[in-house]
Image (cartoon, rainbow, N blue to C red):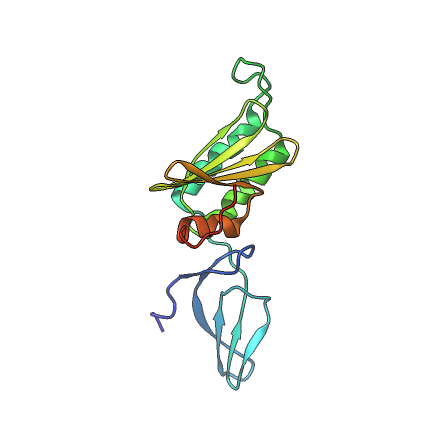
Length: 180
């Protein structure tokens, strides 16, 4: 049973978190073994006969790089207006929270987070980079967002952020549909 008890990352659909799983045997009311699996699901028992699976949602840790970037993102809430001595506007809590949520979702799919920074108008940018592929996702203080994708320094998409499109951009850029 030790091989089944190892923690495993299971990818869920976009918008649903991935899962970290461990399997354990627990007895049911009839002393038959029940395999409890911490996999993405609704918490229902499923199975047939003497073996049943229980599913539960588990939220795994962020990657070390995403943790570093998330720490920086949360630090932006402490900025005050004129933080750069050029009459800049500080990001508001809603902008920080939206940025953090997107970062956490993208880290579930191992997207290559590279950098974050506040902007002079209260915006926050997340930058992703892998070889010649780059992406910038902007979160504005008014709640609007924008994503820009690059291949070899050439802009190939500007529009609303999409985790699907971001995944396609980094996983299979030749197949991704890009519209400027």
